[in-house]
Image 1 (tube, one colour):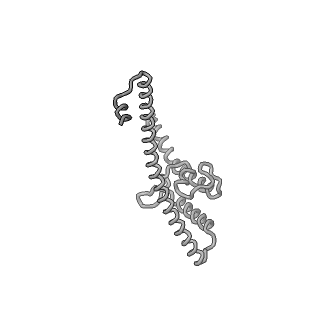
Image 2: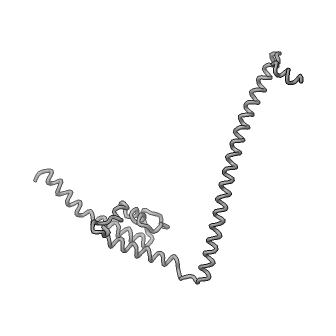
Length: 173
């Protein structure tokens, strides 16, 4: 058998086993996520396919890839993922709230959104004011440097005994 035939046979073996290895990685990652014993992502992870892919060590496109027939490349993984995600959601939401509690919570959310909007406007106003004050401070610094330079020039002239004509005229009036 030639070297190229050996390489081709090796590549075929690799690709034949690749799908099964990927499926195993995804299944193991789902198990870890289900029990909260993740090794790659933080224990308080967000339940998403991106997180699953990261935990499994595969590209997200591997997980969301669809075959030409329109089916998922790993339908059993996607199905189990959705089941676990729904199960997690039911556990987090708990028992259904009464209508009065729901209305009260919606009202609170609306009030908090309005407060958030007003705070954002105030932050924007303060930011603009800060920029104006910063410009003013920069101008004052430039004026102070110019004044210091002029004072130094006056001291040198007074020390030399000559007073500039413009200064005499200004003070003489």
